[in-house]
Length: 154
Image 1 (cartoon, rainbow, N blue to C red):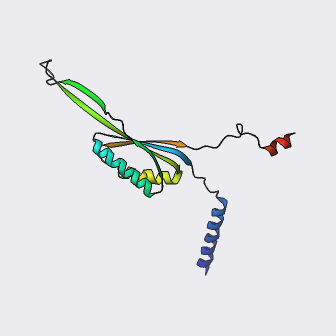
Image 2: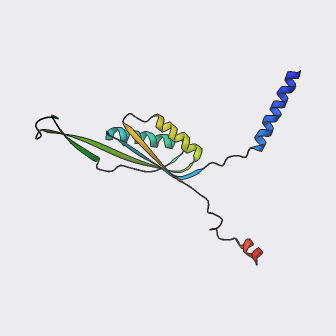
Image 3: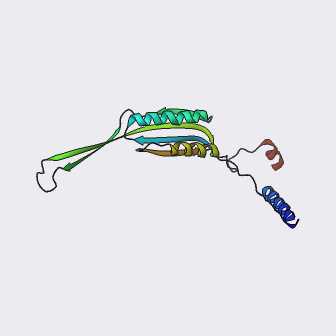
């Protein structure tokens, strides 16, 4: 019976701790932009389709999805033989393709869940950069005073 009394006390303590903790307000995002880059444009198109479809299934508003027409080229010229024949060179080229996806009006928990889901399924050779634009309230010193506040001041 002592054991059961201790059990009830812990239940009461848990209930009190739930009352004392204030609920955390979820952060709001106006826009989340994904920049996806890789070496294969077909993989990027497929991943953009996957991410937008996942967002639609989660009820996230999908914004603009676009890709630049040209890839970013980096060329490196090196000597074919290190010690002789300076005229004989080899050129290497890296092409990096980009895709941009925008998602509008998300809560913090939805954004975290969605980003974790699509990052876990990121293909090999693809990098992702996430830019979040949050919603903030107007500070007190900038707000226009309400009519009631003006009447009290006079």
